[in-house]
Image (cartoon, rainbow, N blue to C red):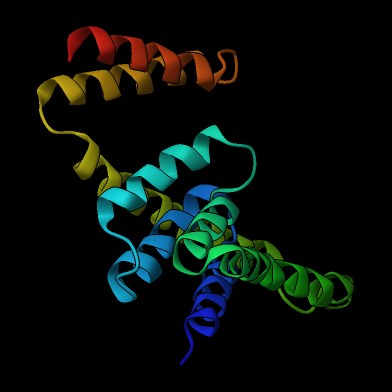
Length: 175
């Protein structure tokens, strides 16, 4: 199977499972690009996540563009980026007209609650797998815990970029 077709299939699968936002796509991207296809090493995946968080746009789109370009140049970047977006567009186009019609027949609230729980599981897996890679010792754990506590205490009142930059400054001083 040609590489461009593999790229399209992989990123369509990632796009299909991307319900719930960027953090949910992390384990999907890891499974597809690192574990299954072996297109990226885990350390490369971690760098993609850092760059994706610093650049505008969803993680999946940034990862698709980077990976597609790395593997197949500009055509790969374009195809992978389009492939990760298409499933969402198709699903929305199909579901939106049906939601009103089936709202009374199915308990959509319970269905959505189930999806939320599944999404939480994916986010926790992303935290676990990238936490293992990022935290090398007690000092790393202390900085991560402090960043979490600051964000939790100032929930919504403190911009996360400030916490990220503060951690960067702490890292530059301590390490």
